[in-house]
Length: 134
Image (cartoon, rainbow, N blue to C red; front, side, top):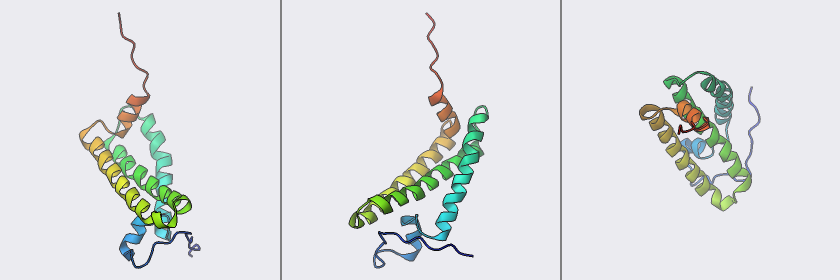
């Protein structure tokens, strides 16, 4: 059973978009992207509290966060592009968003594999600074 397709006010020009790239560039359209969006939201609802509750950090948890956060944000920001960016500027905005998402994925992967990880970084940023002893 399929849900009705959401039509965007700003469709991608068919002559400029390749079918295999349309899902990535126009991530707010299509049943598969909506499934990914909802699944990533559900995953984040469990991953974020778990990451904050566990002392320290776990690499598998950090890696999952490093994928779920950018993917969920990419799809959500494509909705913003569809609703608020003028038609002529939408393809460039979508391409820029894709580039930013790829950089975010790479940065979070580097943080998780060569740094302290997302969980420890977030906990360190929220930790109160230690008072200096006189």
